[in-house]
Length: 323
Image (cartoon, rainbow, N blue to C red; front, side):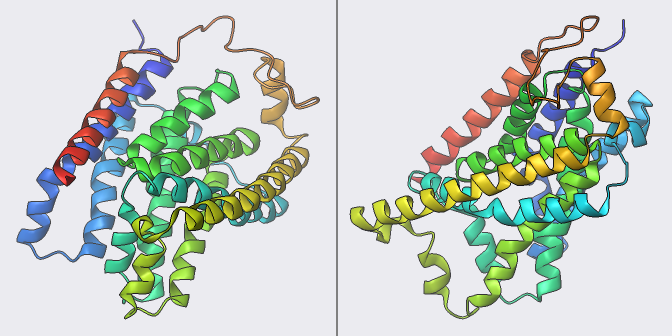
């Protein structure tokens, strides 16, 4: 009996989550033994935990790499719109990240602080290029491919949730989830993983470039924006209100750009095929069917439940040991 696509993708996601959750216990001592610096360790970690399982996945399943990853070209106007989406999505992430930082520690700020003196190109490789390749190949490539016959809202939300969990901390989970949903839609619209790669790269490049505005030696300034404990109640409310307004404006702009991307791609073959199987009706932007009539598979299964349990378990442990 053939393994159903959603179950296969979720098993693959479970393997990635286990690697992200526990791989550090194995890799960290090895990296320290060979005196591998933090930047190289971060890149190697992503390659080992994300790309190697992907290679094994294709060797076992013998699926077409081109079809699974949707290695299809995108047009010039696609590129312009997608870069715009990556730029204007920033305020939404700022709001979600800041709000989450009220309750959970900002892990990424500590990493950025340790990389403060590195050359810009090295920072871009670590923070933008590597995630845009490794995370997109695994999540919007392999994992999303299992949901290709599912309602696009459902597939985007589920894979967005998995993407958030893969970051393995609550502070990043919320904006990673929102970004994951957006990136899944870009792949659905363009039928190309290059769309999500470009948007992901753009999205991660902006905060990396902003670090150039902060003096490397000014550690107080670098940590101050993320140290919520130093904010008064009035300051917190003020910042949240400002970020909410910016995020609202950003959401409108991003929504308009997504609609523009749909318009640019409206005559593409893959969209006509999507309409034919009632996955998405681009004529009036309505979802019309949850799954194909001949392949009804629930998106909720035991591997997905295990993924959620592992994530919750890790977060409880971190909160317990951080006290």
